[in-house]
Amino acid sequence: MSVHKRKHGKNPWFYQFNLPGSSRERRARITGSGFVTKHAAIDAEAIRRIEEQQKREMKKAGACVVAAVPKTLAMLMEEFFAQHVNKKLAPKTVERYHEQAAYLHPELLAMPLAEITPLHLDREWRRLQESGGHHRRTKASRPLSAKTVRNIAGIVSSAFAKAVKWGLVKTNPVSASEPPVPKKRKGIGLSVAQSDMLIAAASGPWCISLFLEMALGLAARRGEVLALRWTDIVAGRAVIARSLSQANGKLEFKETKTGEPRVIKIPEATLTKLEQHRERQDEFRSQFGSDYRGDLDLIFANPDGSPLKPDSISATVSVLFKRLKIPKPKGASLHLLRHTMASQMLDGGVPLPVVSQRLGHSSVRVTADVYSHAIHGQDDEAVRRWEEYSSGTGRPSRKTGRRTCNESRWGIARASTCQQGACKL
Image 1: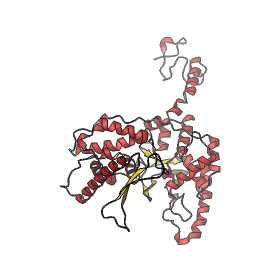
Image 2: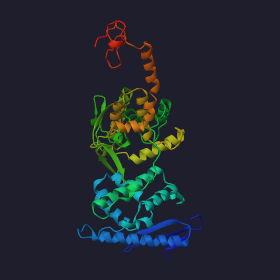
Image 3: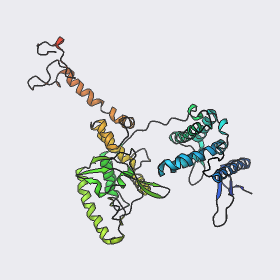
Image 4: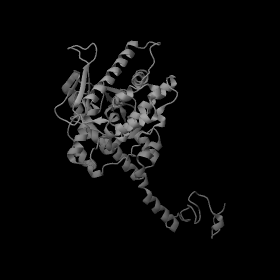
């Protein structure tokens, strides 16, 4: 019997079965859990068996041109991943797509493409948002965030867009559905005191303290800092031209998110610490001898010169935030350092295009959307300057050779209102 019941839990029923061809040495087992009744588990198992059978049929067809075309959503997703996602997207993106697509309900996946309507999809978006996820330990159902559900809807929409191009369906039903709209995120940041506390209390890899200071000073992404080489430091500036990615347990150096390199000034205090860091690294180089990975030339690396794992670094920093109990609300991550630098620069009056270029955003609009709160925070300064101008205290005098009494902000004299006759058009 492939349907079983656990002794404890609100949703005790689950199913499991082995795929054809499984053996003791190489067992391929499919499991589904979280069902209230036995019949629900039996129905879900039947749908899953059909889905796995369809996958096997498509795999047998391979890349054959005359292979059967997808008829169900499950078959479309399989074809979409094989033809587009797995071949054209970055490994980390592929991993994330697979994780998010796995949340789709088997009943929806088993539906014929032509029968799927926006109503079916709206029901699925609501289910996902209410109970689409599960807790890692208990496996009990939990809600998914609006952002995650919208990302899942985006994957399904992309698959249907391909289906339209392939002539499998006439329209994309996702475009007429209404996935949840996530709340606009704000790029909040730490205070100067909190940043100093975080760097001073850093523990973990031998270079974690300087790594955090570098990540804060450059406002760069995690992978960009981890991919930095000593040859990327030129005249006190860092040339960010690549990133270190971790997907499916594998590390890979790739281009930056926008594909464009950028040159960023390194704070003077950090430059001094970099020199000390290099001396320490040279000691490791001597200890490991020929086993040292000098060919990688990494600034931040394990003692033997091999790359640090991005996910491990993020986990270390998250634990550090939790231990220090900063900031509030909880759930801070390494990416918060990037937001910290960006918010402080904007709050200090650094022009938006300059901040956008330093962050490596694809456009100034992206920066403005994420950090609108910091930009709006400059209103007080704008009003102060306007009041000074309006009252005359902030206007340049004629003695200094600058604008005269009624010269406008844009350098255009207003002769019609000038009382001294000095303004001429």
